[in-house]
Length: 102
Image (cartoon, rainbow, N blue to C red; front, side, top):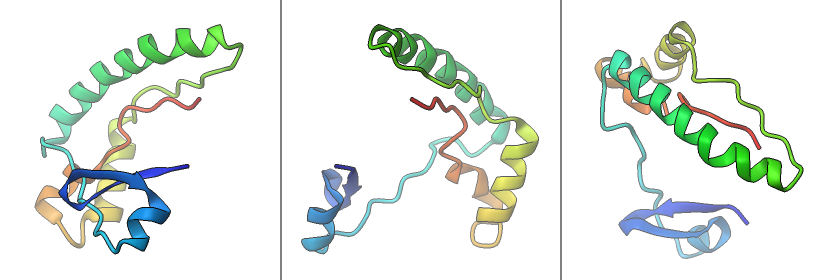
């Protein structure tokens, strides 16, 4: 079952957290500069690939590695999804700059 991070750093199954009326903890990047975020994402992408791809291959499964999100796509997502509410710090809400699908 999926788990979420609720207030006071409680990691609970979604149904249990909502049943107990816990608020979700906000998740955002520590950095706000898109250039810095993309450098960090490139490093994280390598870590993800090195960590998960061998494990997945051992189980005869596949991993899809699209690479880190391109800068122009990240800029557009930050503007469209978060620009209206947090214009100056909109990039800190981008949580999918490094990604790997299993």
